[in-house]
Each structure stands twice: as structure tokens, then as C-alpha cells.
Amino acid sequence: MKLGAFSVSLAVKDLEKSKAFYEGLGFVDIGISDAVNWVVLKNGDTIIGLFQGMFDKNILTFNPGWDQDARTLEDFQDVRDIQKALKAKGYAFVSEADEAGSGRASFMLVDPDGNPVLVDQHV
Image (cartoon, rainbow, N blue to C red; front, side, top):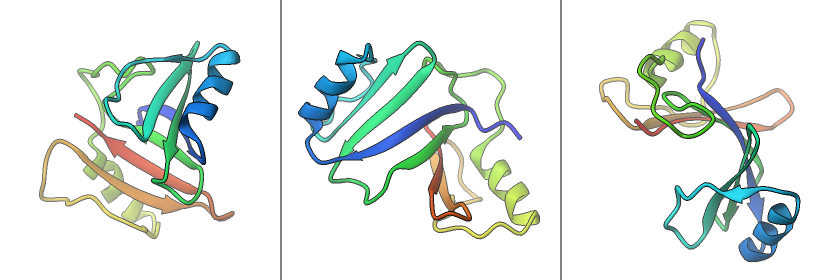
């Protein structure tokens, strides 16, 4: 199963304060957000998203179709195919992608310890 680029999506209370903190650790804004309540930062191959007021918990995020530089991959496993494979294995979903659709879509699972896992395809 090809889940794509991995990042941690952090639920933050103060976006600017959190952004400054992570920039002090060497993370840089990769410039994929024009929104006021979230930003994606990178340090080497490590990616974190900071989201203010969007999530209740931190989320493990996978992006099918993207590499670690948010570049579109020519060959990737579509989010709907991943979802179908997980359904066949008996996984339960919090939200699901429309399997009749194409392009952008996402689904969410929760791991046995209550951690949200988002598979979010942007291509």
C-alpha cells in the first residue's frame, strides 16, 4: 500500500506562536497555504502542519500522490483504492472518500490508541 507523503498535523492554540517556535527549530514554511489558520513547515524530510481551530487532536497525515516536497507523483495509489483495500481488511472509518469520484478526496481512521489517521489526496 502506497500512502504517500507523511506529516503530522498539529492542533495549535496560537498559530503565529507555534510557527515561530518550529521555525526556531529550523523548520521553514513551504508555501502551500494561503489560509490564515494553517501552515505547513518542513525541516529536511520532516513535515508538520500547524492548524489553529480546525482539529481537536493531532493527526497522522498521509498524502497519496505527493512526495515529501508536495510534488505530484506520476505513479501513485489513489485514495479510493487504498480505502477499498482497507475496507476489505475490516478497517472502520470515521469518514470516507466517495468511491465513485476522482481527484481530491480523503478518509479518516482512528488507530487502537485513539490517534486520528487522515489519508488526504490533493491530486
